[in-house]
Length: 199
Length: 199
DNA sequence: CCGTTTGACATACCGGTGGTATGCGAATAG
DNA sequence: CTATTCGCATACCACCGGTATGTCAAACGG
Image (cartoon, rainbow over all chains, first blue to last red):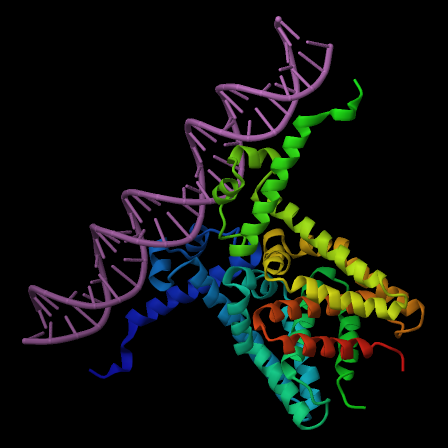
């Protein structure tokens, strides 16, 4: 009995779970958490409510799982963009720019930035954000303080200010549609970041 | 028939309406929009659902009215704080600081910053915010650009970045509880604002 | 190979929710 | 004094999130 092919059972389970997550993400993004019913989600996934509640404890739990995946994806994109640079300062700037780009996708927005805090509560949302992307921001700022690139100061308030600024900017850019706004925002953010450097 | 005392009728109507708004605001703030039912609201107000739907079209409409009042109050506080200063630059700083102070009240937060965008959608929430407080921020920045205090640049992206930064900061400060965080945040925000000044 | 068990779902059902249609009684108008 | 308006209560509905139970094939032990 080698467990080489412990197979069809767990495979099917995972397939169903992924389908639920996929359709849930799509519908949450399209119409928002409050406006989508479990009946719609399970219908789109081709299963029933029984299947959904077999995989997730509640509608909120499904949303939480969707959000976690999304944040992980964004976090990886940010880390990848930052990792392509050598200088600590360049890593910060690249990471911030990539974050805005990644979260400007309209689908992602509603889940990550709008419904997330409302559905899970701001505290839990913050913890999840911290675990995925805000942590990288804090680490980058800490490194820069240690290197003396930016003035010595508590990094937590700074991280929150910057995180909030980028979130709101991404939200705005998604609705503006004007490509010039993206460039202007990047420029403005760059100026704000530059303010941190020791002169 | 002078309409001097067109009286008890409209008075009672307004009394009921205000009671609904008061209890609605309290419950929305305490447990959040999704977790409070209309039954609870009308029970707390001492009326029935018939009364609520006579005054408001829907649960969302009641929330919208509550949010509008709240934003107006915050907007007035910000304008008052700014009006106490003469210099344009001081007005901006005072207004920003007052905004953070005003929106750090835990009750206000959930309605204004968390549930607001999720319930009404980010677009409508932005329009309402624009009408109450973000407009003042834009105007202050425009004035400062005209006066040459800060570098010539599009004010819209800047306003969004700052607005988002302050929103997130207020959210964070409400949960941190540490008074030092407030001071640190003000200092950090001050440094970011200083970055805008022409050297 | 076969009975038994497990587990991944489907089905049936429930209390409660936002929303609506209607009824009613007092304040107002004429 | 009658008619009408209107602020609100009552009764009711479709639907939603959540639960309890049933079902049938895959996994397993012998």
